[in-house]
Image 1 (spheres, one colour):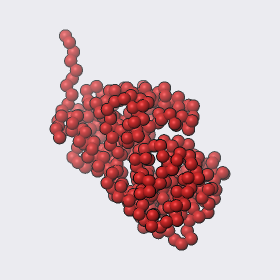
Image 2: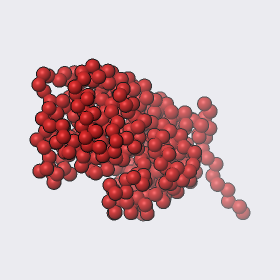
Image 3: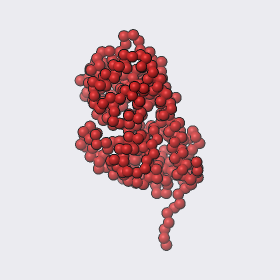
Length: 349
């Protein structure tokens, strides 16, 4: 007797997320998307897996798909063993970590991990998926070059523009221009550039940064105009953004730039580097400044230009908030994914 595959479920979309808890922006994405879908009346639940599911998937039990689910949504880093056979799969690409320009910044061990473990996993997931979504055009283009050339839809990550909103900060006469860095203390994020930039800027500028224990070894070499905020909760990040004049974000590896979009929602101009997804998040001269890669003097010059022109600051603050509301809201993201799910689950438009 010939065995036939079980028919795929149809009907209104009901989304089962299978995700590894990593403590990164990917977690935030999954939580925000699930919440946005529920607000629209779409059933959505998350099955969280421990971090070891990424590098030792055989040590983690495979969760059973709920009977109500019509679509499973995963990150491309999820090992294929966790993908159910009977459900249509949506896979989201969150990064461009295989960018050849990053090899020297990653180090040998991390580069080998990405090349020999993560990349093969991602290729299998992308080929298995019914729909592949990239969080930016940059991510989609890099995936086609380094992973596999498949059709991809671009849906930008969404942010809570009600939570991330402008504060009431007014720079006082004689007060330093306050820059903010929010991110992991890693070379890939440009953390090694912060001290040289602030040394170049001098005492008329100050930087509040999220360093914590990871930055301890570097602190002895930092200039006095840098202040460590430590690890921040979401509400503390919002408060720090509302108490800053601009976001300094010299990341070398950015698939989307969630922190930049959140800062823009808070009305902050963003000073970033070219060559990542920042090219499509920040509009130069309108919502921020984009500088050449690793150009410390160029980044410092951009900060000076912004600090010295109050009208430019005001215009950029307004434009940044407007762009975040129109292009990067969690509402727009949830709407785009809901439309995609409907097409997969046979529910019609």
